[in-house]
Length: 146
Image (cartoon, rainbow, N blue to C red; front, side, top):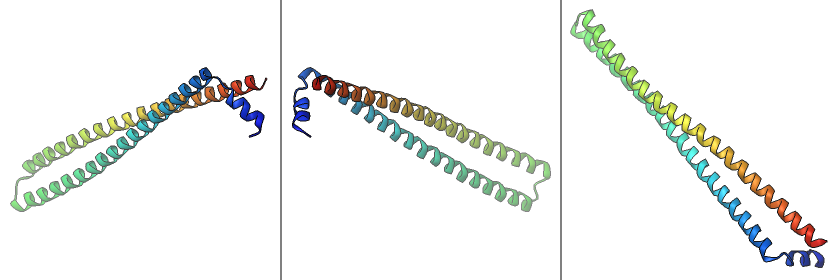
């Protein structure tokens, strides 16, 4: 910086500095909000992944139980109609568990999408605040230079 640039910078009055500090604080707050929303999004995505994994494990476990029960029933000589009824009940239980986990997964995906939208909105606000701050500083320096 030349002496004239230092003079321009040093002559910015306290009102201008207060406006600059207010814009800077607003920008920092928007950045903090964006980071918080991004962290929540990450947490939701992790939770959705864990539910999906749990769903797969439950489905495998229930399939295994169904296969074991089917083999046991065949060994015990249970008649075909009773066997079909038991298999159907087990299948219905599996379907119910799957539907519950699918709904939980869908709800987490919806929350993730809402958080992504919030991030996009906060990033836009952050950019607007930054643009306003840059415009304000440019105007102040231009006014001081004249």
